[in-house]
Image 1 (cartoon, rainbow, N blue to C red):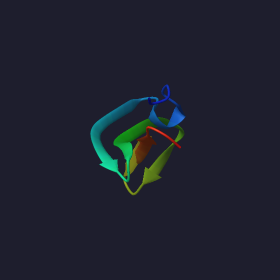
Image 2: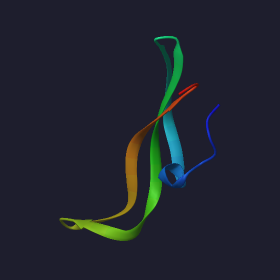
Image 3: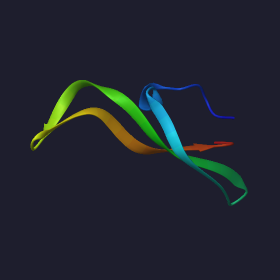
Amino acid sequence: MAAAASNIDALYAHKPAVITWDGRLEHYYTAVSVLDSPVRVGDYVQHELRGIARATDRA
């Protein structure tokens, strides 16, 4: 069972993929949180942090 939302996926958790691997159930998804301080990348200001998160049914 997945844990409650944490800082890493506080804003969104989407685009899921669930697979079995080596006897485990693995859940991958895009995790999005709000940055405390926006970051400028060229002419663009980024307000969110995005990454791929992984959750498993056991440690």
